[in-house]
Length: 287
Image (tube, rainbow, N blue to C red; front, side, top):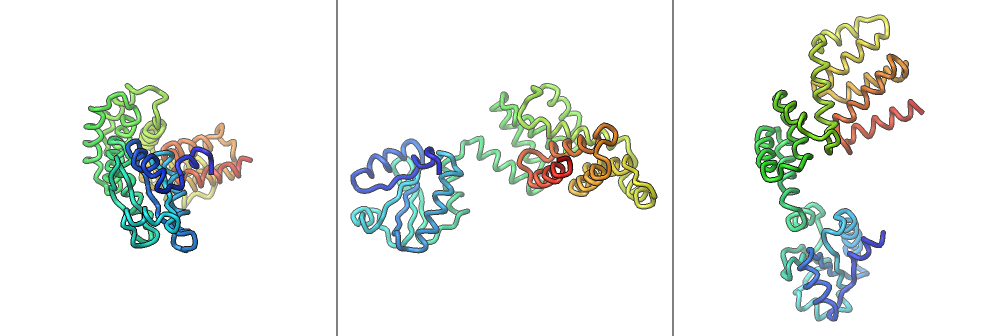
């Protein structure tokens, strides 16, 4: 555990409680853990809390109270079960959990106190997208952009949703006005590129039928089918097909298969599990 994380974890007692809990909570939320070393559930809860301190990167502080050494604090805070978690915010107890800690429940409580208004809106937008309510997400994004017009990452996100909703001309207009190095801009650019390439090709069923009946290993036909698969939201099938070209002839058409895979990774976005998996496969092939 690095020093920055260690600074956010501290044992407290009656003497330093005012400074390290009450006053500290005026700056950031304080998660107050009441525990006993010998209690098994306390050990697992402590491990979870320390993990969350690292994940939240200074958005809250963890203060720990060993109950056997701090009976007065235990009485004052009315602790009746172990472990017990109290969330202290702006000098007041803002919530808590008695007994075994549910990670999602605790994260939900912390997020309410630690997320910025923009982060909360983005989470709501992500939820709408996951529920296939993209028009609502687009409308919400447009409202947020009205308040934060210089946040180019939001414009990029809006572009991508507009493209998915087939509002291509609107997306192109926004993209043209964005800096070339705007965060995440490769994603909508790649999505548009695949749509443009797919327009020039036969329909997917025809291409797949041709592939099945083809006696030769027709790389161009495979690549065309992969492009159509991408635009049909069958991305893993597309990656498998392009990878098979790479396995057969990595230098074909000036590394067209490798370049296409990179475009698909751009489309999937940073941190995508599928992209990470196929990057490893591609790297293993090339090296």
